[in-house]
Image (cartoon, rainbow, N blue to C red; front, top):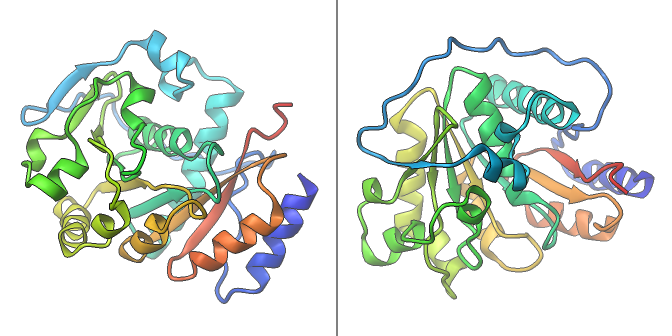
Length: 267
């Protein structure tokens, strides 16, 4: 863990305007955002799919758990991310990692769920890992059309969005079928227009994109210039300092608001 911290500090020092890491595992107090009134949102134009608590719990999604240390960690992350977004008037965030299997998709999902549950925002979570879309699997959603079908086949966006019942205020855009030319599609004018539309349609909406790992393909570096900020997920005991430094250099065109040290203390 100490090596990762040192690598992060070195990488931040070499870049201009670097922001402090988001300390998910920190034991310091944070400001808690007041919870909104418990009001249900009617999703009349979006598919509603029931996602059971047992499935959410099995996939380690925060909404499947009673309050505990696990859910508190994501509340802390939520609060710190919101502070950075609000102070800069941002609402579009990408989540990625240096390598494969470091927990970025589950982090993106749990951050989105925490935002949707605890604050007065609606949240749109987009599976932009078009090489290996997997967000639907974490939620137990059936495989089907998604973002790739919108980009390639002009599928209507309204037909692709899903509201997982049980997580109020959250809408999901699955990835759809895998694409070999995913980097080109994410960097296409059509994708740029879609991000702009998502960003501006609802003033209170936060949009989160789950991207492929930075070092495994060109997708993340091609796409991050379209978003307001990026969150980098690293895994304790797995991600090497050189990989973090390389990933941060490749993401130099975006605002890295912090890092999430995943699986800290789990060994």
